Amino acid sequence: MLNNKTESAIPAQVERNWYVVSARGQVLGRLAARVAAVLRGKHRPDYTPHVDCGDFVIITDAEEIQLTGKKATDKMRYWHTGYIGHLRSKSYGELLETDPEDVIWRAVKGMLPHNTLGRNMIKKLKVYRGSEHPHSAQQPEPLSE
Image 1 (spheres, helix red, strand yellow):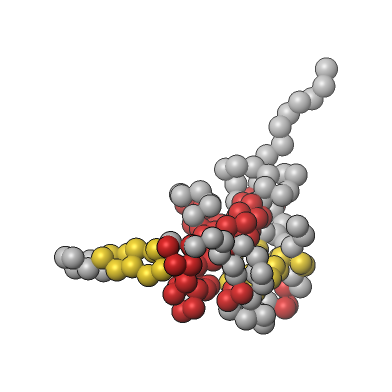
Image 2: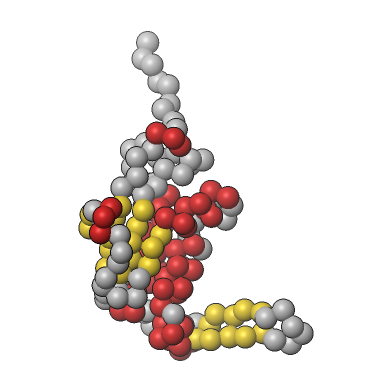
């Protein structure tokens, strides 16, 4: 008989790599989906759904991200200040001008699990507005398509 025992990743034994990807000219949703898969570890052969076995991802050139269609004017982000009647909103075009790192961070966060595991995974994402990042000591590799 064959030994069909399923191997499961052990959190203490997971070796994490660092990847860098440029957002220049890329579409927000497609980039976020690819990065979320790497943060979860779905690109690895030892992927285990209940274990954080993903890698670190550095996104540079956040200000160069693209939105398709009329999302820059029509898509809105809403938040509430906590005071009565203080519902605030901004279009994604305005958000990309003021804080493009937050736009990418929220897009990736929404594609991760909404539990403790997802909150630990999002901590491995580093987003920077320009092309420079302070993680050269980790020797990040370019993220392949």
